[in-house]
Length: 434
Image (cartoon, rainbow, N blue to C red):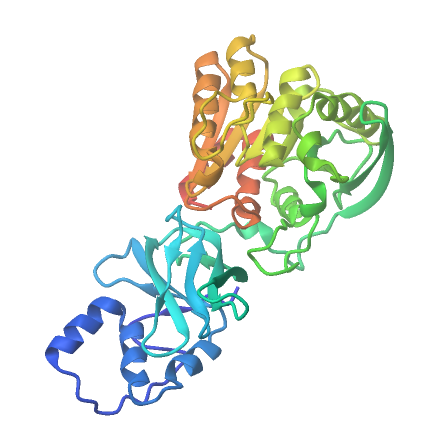
């Protein structure tokens, strides 16, 4: 990622700041309106060069800057930029610690807009920018037409964000193979597409762990698949590295593809039954899978986290581990569905685990602190507390991120080591901040 860090000076733009009559009072006001040195210099240059802001914007690799804060090493300042027009009414940024978003301001007399946000140095999250325009309708006097346009998406990564080294491929690490299969499912009443990861060191005489990954088509990407804010995770590469570095024992993974009805499938019992009763049996028939449930785990993000926990609750004699990333545990599966921001009712799975006898299942739960829009922080903490009070082993991890693969791809290794590695290895990983 071409993240931009600036300390006190502009690295992408050289300002030709000419002497201009700015009084101390004007400078004082301008410093408030343009609170970073970068913004102030752009504004000052724009007074004599009306293309200064546009030239600066056009040279940005990404449409934001991350600048270190003076006298506070734990915080950084992010400035977001966007280009508007004469029809721009306002612009909004969404994503990160400000749940309701940030409203942009116009930079001087230009059509460049900006907003500023202070964030922890170890934060990392995706964001988007929308433009709201207002035009006079020619056919109707006194009526204005309004419209919203999505301008762009991006990702902010703070200088001390705990990014994972396991997502990077290296020449010295043997690469496993991905194979495509189709499975006829009685429970799903259709043919299901899956991909199977087999480690480079696969030996049919050796018992392997088994990971069943929901949203599988988004987890089989290469390490440089696309822009970092987009929805992909290089799980085969992560497994290559973990196995090669002996963080986990040899592991086979089955990537379960979505097929047109993800929203309903992942919160259904039939999906849980398909995975536990059909896929695990298929894997045992075709590969050497360790016989103990503790060596079989289900994994998923968002609704996939719900699916993983539901599968283990229904089939704990087969599934011994749950890896949930930003699990959507607010679902009630009733007509009175929760509004995610303000959940009125307890989620179904939380109640199910509260009311049921303890299973022999180990949990890894993680969630981004900026995932407030889906009620994920509170409901994940609630499930964690219920599980711990019931006597479950739970590893819980929260980080300064949101509801996206940008976070999930960097925390997935934590979960795999938590569930399949040695406990001391997981503890060491947490202390190092990886």
